[in-house]
Length: 283
Ligand SMILES: O=C(O)CCC(=O)C(=O)O
Ligand SMILES: [Fe+2]
Image (cartoon, rainbow, N blue to C red; front, side, top):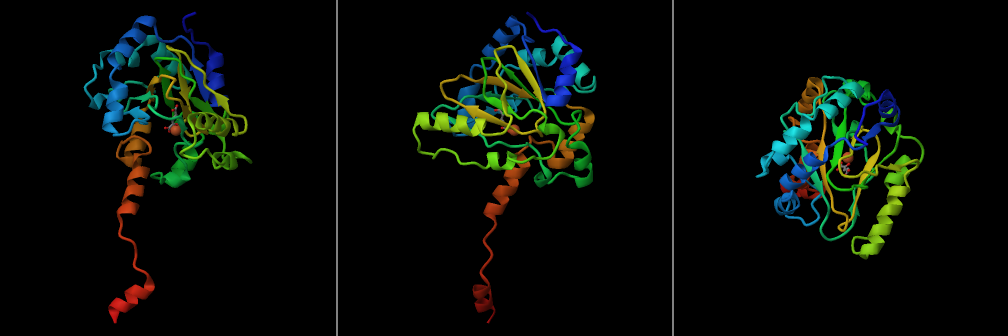
């Protein structure tokens, strides 16, 4: 049955930190999106020089026909549902697809991300006091995954978007993982065990044409298998305020970029000389 908005969805989103819209994309749009995105896995692996690449983002930077993505971002039933769950100021197309990406499956080996919250106090937010005010506000940050093929990769901890960590969560996120050179099956089962090890975790099981709206500051994870094709739109519905926040945080770049740049810089810095050497030079 085609998607219809109802108010219980709003309550679910606020309480659990996610809501799945079933059957929200019409078949003709899924067909057009699949066609437009057919080269995305190859391009993602080439651009990142990595057969295990997780995504291509933003897709508008590459040679991809964006017409069907514009149709998706303006789909009346979707814009309306997001407007009711969040506010009419939360718009998919606000940045003209400027940040929209596509997730793809890895080519060689199973892998998963760590259990994480996308932004924490350690992410160097532009204003700490402001961040404390907005981090648990369900109207502030949001994220969207919209699969064009069946997608069971994303797991979430319902309710964790409204609070700080509770017992067992940090431990589960830091728990051991299979060795890098483990067999395919060991990686597959070990990563699954790691996902299942998070207290109260649920898996967002979706089919083509479904869409999940979720809180990226709650605990979540992506778990990937090469033999499970993935072509999933990765997007958000920002307000002007959210765009301004990202701009102040990282010059409008995608989340995670600033952190990576900082890591790179730290690596590139020449190591401080030991005291003994510094003294030697002086004398
Ligand atoms: O693959 C997913 O659905 C989630 C990925 C994710 O959380 C991330 O890359 O930060
Ligand atoms: Fe994430």
